[in-house]
Length: 79
Ligand code: SF4
View 1 (cartoon, protein in one colour):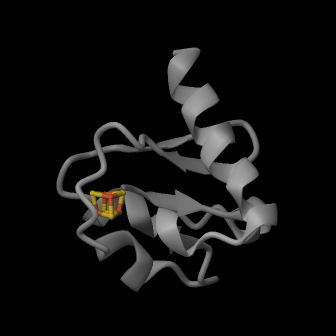
View 2 (tube, protein in one colour):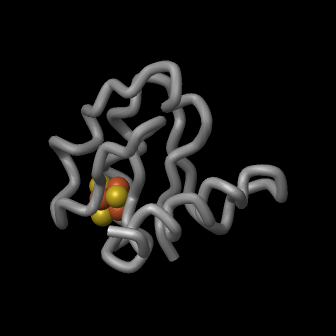
């Protein structure tokens, strides 16, 4: 399981999440920040500091939000 950054990040890109992640698995992409799902340890620290409530746990995603997990996987696979 992992946490996932959703669409709300795209207009905000505040980046507070990157300063609290204990395993440094959040990186800035061209359109939003992304969490590496292979490294995330589900601590929820990022979710607590996001000013636009853009971060959800993987198992709480709605079907239309699952694309954001796929986008994160693609972002880190292409690095
Ligand atoms: Fe990092 Fe924790 Fe957020 Fe996962 S849940 S991205 S480990 S701060």
